[in-house]
Structure formats: C-alpha cells, structure tokens
Image (cartoon, rainbow, N blue to C red; front, top):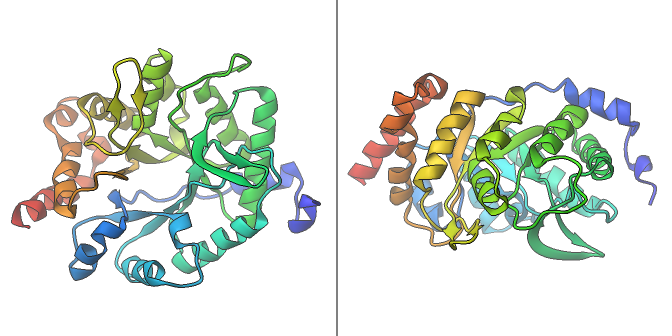
Length: 317
C-alpha cells in the first residue's frame, strides 16, 4: 500500500511541524464517560456535568439510536472522543476504512479532541479487543511517531494518546514508558492523556514509584486525566474499571494536579455501572480535604463550584 499517496504532504518534517503548531485543547472541567445505562437520565434532565467522553467505536455507524442520542447530548455538553481500536503501535498497514469512519464521526460530533491508547490491539486483520503493550525501543519509537503523524495528517488534527495499564515488560526495552511517551509527544506533536489509575496499576505490577512516572511527563503536553477503579489481586492489580477510585489513586491525583495544574478530568466506569446519582456522589471527592490541605485547590480553580453542584444534585436526586 502506498500510504503516502493518501496524504497531501506526508514527509515526517511537514507532518510534525503542522501538529506542533496546534493550540492546546481547552480545560473542560470535570466529566464522565457516556454510557447507555445513563442515556434516559441525561436526556430527562440536565445533570451538572461539565462534559462527556464517548467511546468512538460505539458511534462509528451511519445511523441508529446511539448516534441520535449522542446528537442530542452534544447539543447540551462538550464531548470528547476516546477510541479503543486505533492500534497506533501495530505493524499492520493503517486501516483507512477505520480512519475514515473516525474522521466522519469527528466531523459530526465536533469533539474537543480525539484520543486513543499507546498500544496495539490486533494484527493480520484480527482485533484482539485488548490494549496490548509494546517494547520501549528506539525502533518502536520511530515506528509509532510515523504512525501518529500519519493519523494526525489524515484526521487533520493532533490526537491525544493515553498510557495503558501493563502486566508484562519487554527485556529489550531501551527506555522507560514515561521517557517513550515524552519523546513521542515531542516528536509527533500529539497530546497526552494521563491515566492516573493506569500509572498506579503499572507501577505496582512492575515495582517502580508512580511519582517517577508522573515527574517524567512534560507538564505542557497533558490535556486530560482519567480516574478509575481497579481489582487488587494481592500480587498484581488488574485495571477493571468496575470499582470506585481507591484512596491511593486519589492521592496520586493530588500529585498530578500539583505537577500539571488544571487538566480536564473524568471518572471511567465500564462494569458494575451504578446509577448516575451514585457517580455524582463519587466525583466530588476531587475536592476532598487532602487536596485543599496539600495546596491543590489553585490547580482545580473554578471547577470547585461544579463539583459542589454535583454533590447537591446527588443529594436532591
């Protein structure tokens, strides 16, 4: 496949220069992942949520009820798109059918940004439906940089990439994950989604200090935080998104606020999904006493009023 023929100017220098000039996405406040279990509650009222994150692949269709619901929600709230099948690190040829569907959805939804994961999800035409790790080598970095530049040029926008939870490491890695992410962002112009829970999970699984990871990420490249729960198995942790956020992850979030300042934040819940009101009770924990005590209130800034509204709405609901 002649990939270059699909792009207006595919030289590495041209692609990188265009995206490095991109304006950093705005601070949106605090949001939630849009899940079908909450459609009716959201449409029946106007819950005090600043924005929603949608799973891109759930809406990459020509029509249907989910897309009609999304159209209604995006009229009321800012939306960001978060994918799970871009497979940016795969060695398979780029899937231009997938990229076109993603571009069409972005044109319809007008998201504040489009994100996915630093991983691969399949090869030889097979989608394994998992976020698989990569070796952190110079060769892999060159490969992923070129793939990111290609995708950004096709979509006409800088993308956002997230660190994933990992359970194995490669013996041939030549750098740390945070060094890889920092260099990837610098060279490709992509932004970063800093998943606080994923850092905590991977740090426990591989025996390093999560604050070392945090401090290795450039301050000016992070545009979103993810918060989530996990399953602690004693010897390892699995990123399951089916529990409330634990205390240690909240504490790491405090440290992230201190380093990165105001960053759009959301809580992910993908299993054991509670009613919307219960999630609104969990979210105000972002303004717990430890955050105020540690001086992170300034980093949260104007979002404080939003979280107080969350709590009041939940009490009244």
